[in-house]
Image (tube, rainbow, N blue to C red; front, side, top):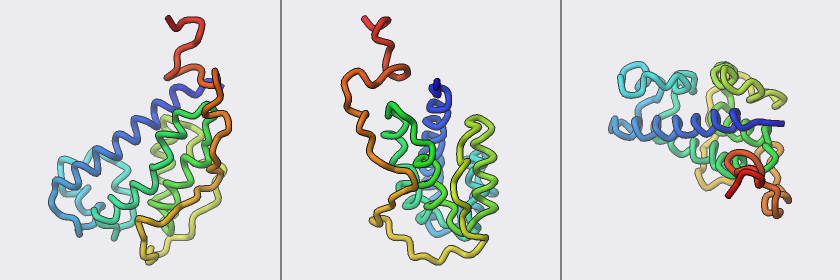
Length: 169
């Protein structure tokens, strides 16, 4: 399956997440809800995904959760076999646990470019306030996340970003 363009779109989304965090940090309001800042600040208004987060999630909390939500993405996006479940499940668990409406809206936004994103995952908890004292050091094992035995296999990496051996010089 040729999923180069899906990988590219997800990599661009990861970049958008990091840019949004940088912009949020520059607001100097670490204890302000992200949704509120997304409505008020021109600098972050274009990041649609910020508007679907839990209404009480603060900038500090989002910063910690984004690290946990996206830590697998660089490895997974460069792995030979794309683990679609792992890519979406960490985001679902870390950013949308207890926010079913937000998760549905987020998935709809991502699926405009990556049709399969978020499909086949178990539902999040119904809309409830997220009261789980999130610990940034907590180890998260996303659904379907397993180390690939083929990641380091010789000749296993083909296609973007690795050139076809026939065309590489």
